[in-house]
Amino acid sequence: MSDTEVARDTPLKIEEADGMLIEWDVPVRMSDGNILHADVFRPTGSGPDAPVPIIMSMGPYGKNLRFQDPPFTGLWEQMCEKYPDVPAGSTNKYQVWEAVDPEKWVPDDYAIVRVDSRGAGRSEGFMSLYSERETQDFYELIESFGEEAWSNGKVGLAGISYYATNQWAVAALKPSHLAAICPWEGSNSFYRETVYHGGIYTDFVEKWFPVQCGDIQYGLGSRGKKDRTTGMWVSGDVDLTDEELAANRLDIQPLLRGHHFDDEFFAERTPDLGKVTVPVLSCGNWGGQGLHNRGNVRGFMNVASEEKYLEMHGREHWTLFYTDWGVGLQRRFFDWYLKGEGDWKETAAPVQLSVRYAGEKFVERAEQEFPLARTRWTELYLDNGSAALTWDAPAEEQTAGYQAFGEGLEFRTPRFEQEMEITGPMAARLWIANSTEDTDLFLTLRLIDPDGQEVTWFGANEPKAPLTLGWLRASHRKLDEEKSEPWMPYHPHQEKEPLTPGEIYQLDIEVWTASCVIEPGYQLALSVLGRDFDHGQGGVMSHLGIEMHGSGLWNHDIAEDRPAATYDSQVTLYTGGDRASRLLLPVIPK
Image (cartoon, rainbow, N blue to C red; front, side):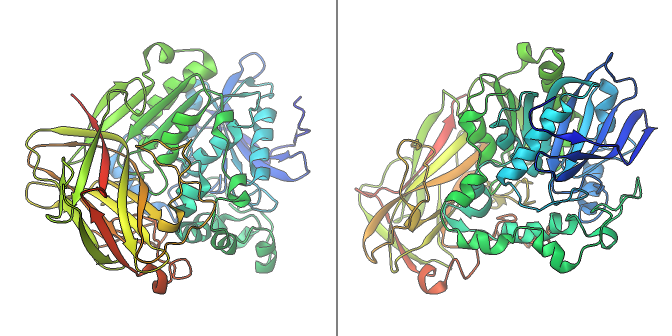
């Protein structure tokens, strides 16, 4: 047995269905006495004489809430229409949001274990997302199920977003039965990638939590949702009052708004990547600016694992994971590390890229490292005199001003005469003066087609996404020199350094990783704003009820964080001469 004193009890129901042995709602007592519930899907012949590896996920989205049910119904229908291979070969009765489909894994001798995290779904307890206790629960579950008589002792973790983010955290605890992880589009800096972009507050969590977590909280009972397959109440069989529900969850909004810096609250929810040593397949999205991009890149770069792989793709956040392509990629990885089968180690490149073109075209390419060693870090200079992006720094210093909450400034390259690829992280260095003690910088890099129209892509959470985005609050401009690279500045976000109105400051701004092949006749455009980018093409409503205009689900418009008296300032941008504002691009030679 493990040393966590975890105990499993009798499942609510055991049945054979759709070629699987299913144990519904297995109670698992954690080391502190709290009970979590798991569903287990495994081959009918699995046992001590035929042990199988485990693919596990744990999170707050409801192990018994079907993907086909609200709030995900529209996304499921879009996915099946666009990718008919997703529903093919499965009854789809066991599909849930952002976790694997058992019917596509169990026939290949895998067990699938899904667990409702503490306080969510059918698991009792206090809901505190990403907390140390939640991570400890995950550790104990891995160790406990890894010792089942039907298990071969190897556990792999797979899942999207939340089910990816907590993989980094539990892997840092080094469970003995954890053999490999595949975090698919999941962050690992709660401060920088989820709540504060460049030190600027986004209300994403406030809008996400009630719809995707609060609606699944344990204790909603008969007021909650019902599992269409089993008839079980998704949020447990107990009906708690609103007051009892509130007492059983962390009140997230005041905490997030009250912690302006990367302090102990965020440190608890941010893993030490240097402690991750297990094999990793980190899968990120070029169009995941805001949440589903940076963590996969930095995770790959900073884990201590000797065997680590990075895969970068495009398109929607919730689709490729479920396709034959996505399942095949995951299976090859897990076949090797959980079964010792296949050819992954001999054939898989350390870095696998789907290089992006206009028109949703992607070309797959294998690489050996990331950022690519052959990258030509190339500076594009802003020129206030011509509103251009130029390859040579303007000789003379010039200034241009803008009202922060207004239309900002835009700079464009000439039309490209030859094809050029940019793939990798980026950074901007801007010289500014400001009329108040603080201002926020919002950078948007866009691709413009030969007709002068902006090219957009279907990003992770934005159907009309620009090439990439970057953010920085000027008072958070301090750099951690040891963690920074010219192409990836790192801000500690530990203190505020107000601006002196009228004085000139250098700001180094992280621009999130992206990929694009720029074809002849196209242009790059850089927008410098003091507010969220809006492409002016009409909004699209997300499943969270957020209207998107180019910046996805991430709005930075909370007056409490950005009072107009300070942040709707008059900004002066300097270019040329000794204050040559520039954008650093990762140009990839053919």
